[in-house]
Image 1 (tube, each protein chain N blue to C red):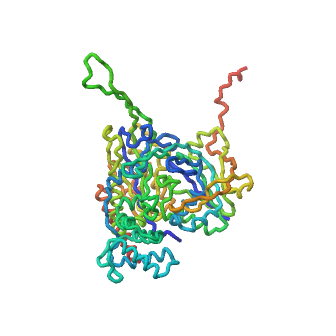
Image 2: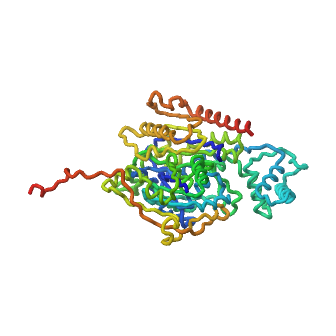
Image 3: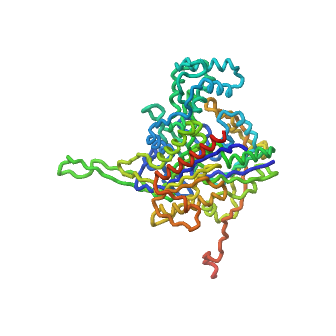
Amino acid sequence: MKTITIKLTGPLQSFGNEATFNQRTTSLHPSKSAVIGMIAAALGFQRDDEKITDLNGLDFAVRIDQPGRVFTEFQTVEWKKDTRKLTYRGHIQDAVFAVAIGSDNDSLIDEIQFALRHPGYQLFLGRRANVPAGVLQIEEFSGLNPVQVLKDFPWQASRWYQKSKSNKQTVKVELLADSKLLSGDKYFMVKDSVGSFSQKNRFFNYRPVERDMIELTNPSYQEKDQSTDHDPFSAL
Amino acid sequence: MTNKNNLYLDINVLQAVPSSNINRDDTGAPKTALYGGVIRSRVSSQSWKRAMRHALNGKDLGSGLRTVKLAQLLKEKIMSLDSSLSESDADNKVKEVFKSTGIKLKGEDTAALLLISKGQVEKIAEYVLAHEEIDKKELKEIFNGNQSVDLALFGRMVADNPELNVEGSSQVAHAISTHEVVPEFDYFTALDDLQKEDTTGATMLGSIEYNSSTLYRYANLNFPELVHNLGSEAAVEGAVEFIKSFVLSMPTGKQNTFANKTLPNYVMITLRTDTPVNLVSAFEEPVKSNQGYVKPSINKLEEEYQNTLKMVDTPIKTLILSMEKIERDKDSILKDDQVTDLNELLSKVSEELQQVVQNENDND
């Protein structure tokens, strides 16, 4: 078993769930299909490549290290000459996610890691205009599955965000993973298994997901200096 | 391993824009984004791409190949896309294409040299495989519609006819300010010139929200993809047009109200063989200044560029065009990368790309 973590961050991210044309909402964390799409793009697969569905077999977990804030992007679309439609597209701003991808096929993980560092097509966080910020940060772990890795993986939130919680020694973050990597029976179904990305026939199947909370150390924790507290009763 | 032939072109631009509202939301306020915990001014990718498309104005750079062997090319492509097809079936499909376009065949070859790109041949092959009956109009659209540079750069989606879709070869990020912005409101009144002397008061009043910002703008280009769409000759020219339109254009929102059309203060172009790198992370911690944002933004950007070099391959070329005098360390790796004007920048990029195209051809 080999696992890699990928840090997903940028000003904007967007992970479509029940998309319709005019109102497209976002889920609050990266979907497995979005990450698989990103890996497929890195590997240089075309949209209708049959090898994409094989990637559904990868083990997947995501940790919401910095939840960000949702906003709706308003746009007009000229879909026919001189005819415009209004569209509303959900985005997550200022978020940081730690994604982990694992497989018993170690060489597949090596290949994916190489491809993410040398992508055949541009990578993006759910929408083409949402370019990842900076170089994609990838780390590698042997002998651990994605959930095991993310249980101990350091908190990835930005410095300012960690500091905003400086009174807390530990923080609790949400983890979502393939159900089989957690208890295996407290799952809920999400339409998030890639059927096809082909524009002729784009569809997704259901996959079981489970949720867990993970406690992480806050490196920006500052112990309150007792002596600066004003205690009026101390004089008595 | 795969993807040995990657070539990405990154464009980083810093541009100070005065009071303006060039891209607004459904309430009329300038678009914003939250980044690094503070509000930034934002201009959407779609908005700037539209301005670029207008600057490119459907410029046609011609096709990649000039050949009489279209029939052969097409047959090979059809057979490679559908291996179950027999040779005679493929021949028939090719014949149908020529029949419905009215292009005459002399034996195996066309009577005249045809201009066509590899991308177009692929589209035609996909189209005939997906349709039993060829629609003349649709086929004509594939023959005519694929060479314009904006299409090759930004792609096209035709929902009811996916064979006509083109995957864009560029990626344009939303522009965001390198610093925090605070929304400002311009309250205005308008007077009626013919108002009677004895009446007072405004005929109309309202307010416009605006802000001013130093924007970080980023775009990249997947050069091999552009070559795939346009052919190598035209792709070099296309890349130059892409840079020019990105650097010189600006969305026109409220332009007449604010006259905010500025030019970039700083342009950095990087040619990389591994991965594109968006340097917006330089501004996650917002720039703080009471003496203008451009200079500290340049310093942060160059610092981030150097930091990222620890994680990626050394770029084959980095070129900088700056309106500001930059104070760098004597041993800065960027000290020899400066050019004097846009023309020099463009010709150096084009030289470099030509070199790459040349090498690829030699290796074939």
